[in-house]
Length: 218
Image (spheres, helix red, strand yellow):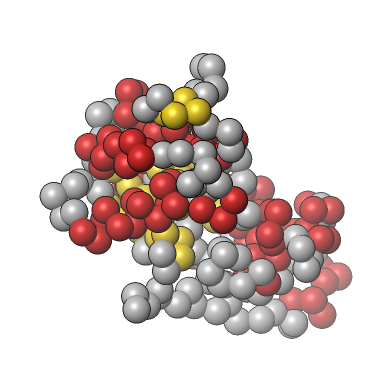
């Protein structure tokens, strides 16, 4: 497809605005599953496909459009697109570029019960470094056994722990982090450690995985 350059007659300069409009348009027309390239799927998404539209809670003020499941003609997505009618590049630039794509959907979910949307509170977009700290994926160990996916956000996750960029299959077998668990699910089909016979000392140093805390609305 060609990258959209305008929305409701307004020119878009920011690449994120263009991709937001493109993914929404495609899902409205065709339906299906959209995933950012830094999303690792950990188990079947079939249970989520029965809903007209699905997003995951990401932070206290946002749903994430980095992973969406939609039936064609999603009313919720169409209403999200309609919020772009007041778009101007100047108004939604810099710190405000995500308002339309992730904050407006949260507002719609809370204030428009007539719009069909299913929101996963923890299993699609948590933990993430925007809400749970920069260490949550690259250093901490969160329990993601129930997660459908893990959104890595590598640009933010690797700021303090750049070593995850250079992980190998050998190191990921015993990497005691959230990212390690997700990588093992992708590589081996399960999240538990894979030890060799000479790695018994490493096996003794496992940390208990932390539960993912709920987001408390203020």
